[in-house]
Length: 254
Length: 181
Image (tube, rainbow over all chains, first blue to last red; front, side, top):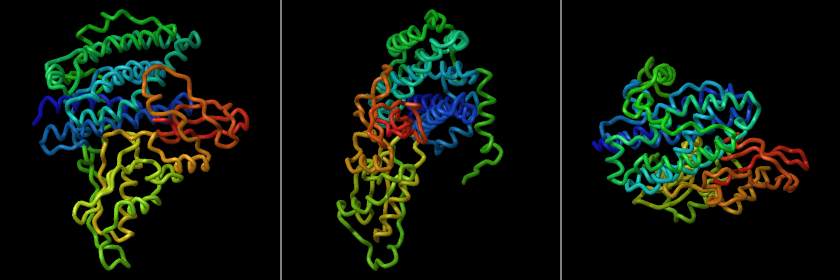
């Protein structure tokens, strides 16, 4: 078993899987048809990526599990997604702000992973970064439109930015596994993504007439832990719905 | 990462002996295998068939997915297998290869014309033009109905991941745009 690669791929897979599941919940509930379609398509891209990452994780683990077993038969404490993506969908402002923070991070990370020393990681990243770029441009457009919109949309966007900001710190916090993955050339240190991320997010928030919170607000340790298996109260109910079928009817196929 | 759909079956009726055709000939057979979500395009026009080769008596077709989550890939793999078996190839293996990543730059000119005839505007930009994170204006896409460039993007996503929704301000018709990717 390649523990380092397993953990790395699992974190990528879980983060994309959970966000995909969250966005899927908007299907049929979007504010307008076009947004409904956009979120469903974004969810589909992320789900496809999650399948690739979880398949890689299963290969690295070498214990006979596959993508489905990893997705459907683990409990909350075994999930390794960043806390940001499990935060509730809330209003459309909350969902799009979460997406905007995630997309920018995802894009800069995948850009680096495309040069990974592990060819399977590089192949997934080279493919996914094209999708992430489109997502990132779209979510930034929406942030500008809603932030620099009506008084109501502006207020909701600012509240969402302030609410979700503390969870962004985790995206750049390297633990022992991240450091090892970087040393092996599998990934880059997450801390190196903070500069380009802040530059991109700051510029878009500025154009959106939204205030960018102080950076140190995202450094509080209380808003971290998802990538090590310590989650917020939001993940359990999400998994209960996502995993229901396999839990109720183990091994069900069609 | 390799996903393989592999079958070994008797040759199709009418073929006494298993067929062992040249890859160029097999490519022409694949010209009739359509993208189920975009029937105007064959898998060859779409540029997803990356390799056709024989490994012993097994015909190996290597395809690359369009978008990571494209739900049509499995069906396409099966359609390729059926088509080749219909031509008498006994053993077909369809493999998936991720890298290099698929791009709309690989669409053939014939494929672009086929899209136009279906009322779908083909990509107007190169993949490299749409690779960055910086916000950018939606591209100017000529209307496939009337040819006017006075069009407007209504939605970044259409009926499938690979399409955006536009409307022509001249003839007022909505149309799908096959996004550069």
